[in-house]
Amino acid sequence: MSGTGLHEIVAERLELNWDRFRQAHPKLAAAVERAELVEVSVDALREDPAYQRAMAQAGFDEATLAGALEVLGVIDGVVGRVLGL
Image (cartoon, rainbow, N blue to C red; front, side, top):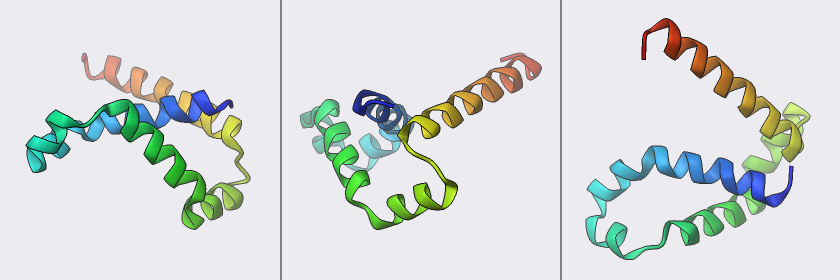
């Protein structure tokens, strides 16, 4: 997976948490660029020992991570259809 793939994953996760962040920090949320938060988050992940350890323990590289998340996306879609969402 290219850096762009990890950026996309982080952007999706950021989006999932944005409302909670905005409620906790309304002024900061209004002023900050989401793209910059993605960059900072990606950099922090790549330097984080827990992230590196988890990736190594799972036998993942960033390409494998992207594939695993694609599988989860398919599962989410099927569950959503089953629930009529």
